[in-house]
Amino acid sequence: MLIDSYDRVVDYLRVSVTERCNFRCTYCMPEKPFSWVPKENLLTFEELFEFMKVAIDEGVKKIRITGGEPLLREGLDKFIRMIYDYAPSVDLAMTTNAFLLKGTAQKLKDAGLKRINVSIDTLIPKVAQDIAAKDVLKNVLEGVEEALKVGLKVKVNMVPMKTVNAQEIVSVLEYCKERNMSIRFIEYMENKFAAKEIVGMKSPELLSILSEHYEFSDDGFDGTSPSHYFTMKDGYRFGIIEPYEDDFCKKCNRIRLTAEGNLIPCLYFDEALSIRDSIKAGDIKGAALVLKEVVRTKPEKNRWGGEDGEVSSRAFYETGG
Ligand code: SAM
Ligand code: SF4
Image (cartoon, rainbow, N blue to C red; front, side, top):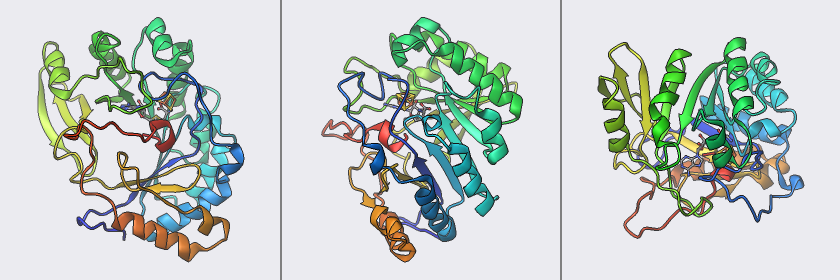
C-alpha cells in the first residue's frame, strides 16, 4: 500500500497519454504559439503499461486515462485492454472532450473501459466554438450519446466562467439530469497558459444561482472524491470541485503521470520525478522506488489561491487535469 507523509493512502493514478489536443480551450491552452513534446519522447503504451503494473502491484486501485486529448493517441483501446487483462478489478476511467468518441466508444468499452468524464461547458454551438477555438459541439454531443448507448457510465465536467457560460449552468445541468449523468462544476484554476481575461466562478456563486431553481441538501464529501456533493429533492446529485477551499487536499489520494514519464505528486507543485529511465531500462525495482519517493514527498496542500497570488506554471494539458 502507498501511504504518504500525511497518512493519506495513494491509490489513484491519473495517466496523461498525450499532451496534444484537437481543442484549444481558453482555460487550458494558448491558441498559439505552440511546441509539442516530440512524439519520440513519449513513452510507448508498452512502457506505460510496465509502469501501470508497478503501480497496481504497489496498491493503485483506480486509473484514469487523460491528456491532452487521450483519443488522439492511436492504440488507446489496446492500452486499456492491457490494463484490464492484468487487473480487471482496477477502476478504469477516462477523461475526454468526446470529439472522437462516436467512432471509438464501443471499442473502448469492449477493451474494459468502464466510465468516462466528458467536458461540456456549453450547449450553444457558438459558445463552444469560442471556448475550443473550433466548431465542436455537434461531435461532442454525438459522442456522449454513443457512449451512453454502448453502456459506458458518463459524468460531465463543466468549468463555469463569468460572461462566457455562466448563463448555462442550469441548462447544462438539465441536459445531464435528463440523461441520468451526474455533473461536476469545476472551479476555474488560474494557470499561465489560460487566456488572461477569464474570470471563473466560485462555489458560493454557483450555489446561489442553482438555489434559484432547485432545492437541494449539502451532502459534504464522499470518500476520497474531490467533489463537494449536493442532492436535489428528486434525488439527483451534483458536485462542485473547490480547489480553493482549505480542506480540498485533506483526502487527496492521487498522483499523476505525464506521457513523457514524469510522476507528479500534486497538480499545483512543479516538483516531479521521472520513471522514464527505469522503465526504459526494464528496471522495475527502480520504477517502484521512484513511485514510493513521489508518494513520500506528496505535499500536504496545493497552492491554488496562495497568498503570493502566484499562478500555476503546470499545464493542465500536460498533467491531464
Ligand atoms: N481533453 C480532455 C478533456 O477536456 O476532458 C482531458 C484533459 S482536460 C486537461 C481534463 C479536465 O481539466 C477537463 O475537465 C477540463 O475541463 C479541466 N480543466 C482544464 N483546464 C482547467 C482549468 N484552468 N481550471 C479548471 N479545470 C480545467
Ligand atoms: Fe484539450 Fe481538454 Fe485542455 Fe480543452 S481542456 S484544450 S479539450 S486538454
